[in-house]
Image (cartoon, rainbow, N blue to C red):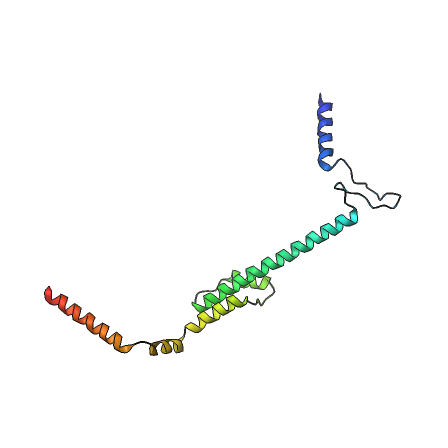
Length: 151
């Protein structure tokens, strides 16, 4: 009873592997060894190398994107005077040290930085309509006096 079950599993395993075993030594006729999926060894090795190169490129691109995000967070923390996170610095370091921000992000961070500061405050203060502000304050004071006198 045990023999047919073992034969069943070994046949199923052979079918799963492709029903061909990879030869241990190169054939004597000089032809390339054929792998289970019908690919020659050289093709298979080239395919594996190509997969590895693509994975390395994807990993590099991913690390660079993470470093760009870390750089944006660092700039925003500088802008709002928040404590820096060493993980962001480490992320930038992993990507190779200095990371250039994409133009859109760099423009956004710079424009936000330019909006703040004492000189921009003074420039905005010039734009305030002082007369309208004085009239509004006077009306508010008169409204409060009127409400107080009713009580």
